[in-house]
Image 1: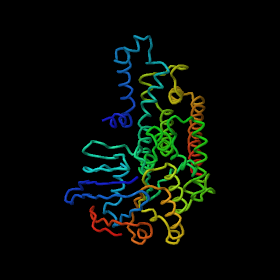
Image 2: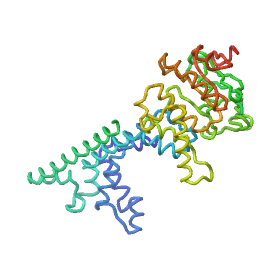
Image 3: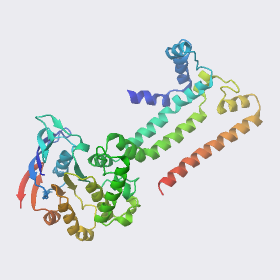
Image 4: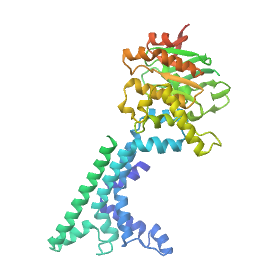
Length: 178
Length: 230
């Protein structure tokens, strides 16, 4: 059940996700009411872009990390226990380091997915220049407005960031396996 | 210090298959090396796993000196980390992302009431004594994957001894080694094990190996003790 809910954003169309987020966090939604009472608002602020990107990319992180933890050699876990290691130390010193490559892979995948997030962000954050406009959004509206020059600049920045993050993650992996 | 075991465990296998039952009882004295001999799948490793608390029997009890590790009637089942049972895995189970020194230090626990600084100094001293005991000083800063099978075995043994166990379990300790190497480390390993002054259970499918190390041997077949050899 938990597994299904955590994986659901991966298969749901981003607009459907955006719709649900809007219902939940909108003025009359259950979380929205709470937020309004405490004097905050998420919808159509930059917090909404963060929320949308997090929810949409979460399954990628969740699945990679889960896979990484499942791949841990059970003998290492048992060996640590026979050595008298506490469960906390076991988790921090044995399990996290062993699952680390998978966690990093999940991190770079979900980072890339967040950068490209469009549908859900448009639904709950809109496209307010200087406030909630994300790079993909800027590319879309520049292109549709015929401003190819601006679009090219943003496309270039996006490609550069993607290359850098991929390069960084493979560099980190190579250093680990040295 | 002695180890007493009386364990009964039924494992339901897949449908259309006979269930496997393990039913073993034995006692190992301090400083004694007891051999468990049998083909693979006979329940030798399962017996060790019961002692270490990786598996729990359905019935029976396990006693280590005066401590009850497991007792169905009294409802006792100590978690693995409190059993003080050293387990040498067939694959040695060294932690791949730690140096040899860190691997061994994992077993050196902080005593209750001991200050952090004191513990650090003591663990450095103990680390060096175990590195020396097993002649692995050279590899202290190496990673397990850079070592040969025999060297890994020494590291695993050093790590086990550093945790100061009250009983030692060896699960096919030589299956990952070349024949020549086995003979070379024979006598020394035996001496080290006896020096540890605790009950040792040695599991193997190789009769020669068992004869070399053990004063007493139990043969196990299909989960039951079938033969007793002195």
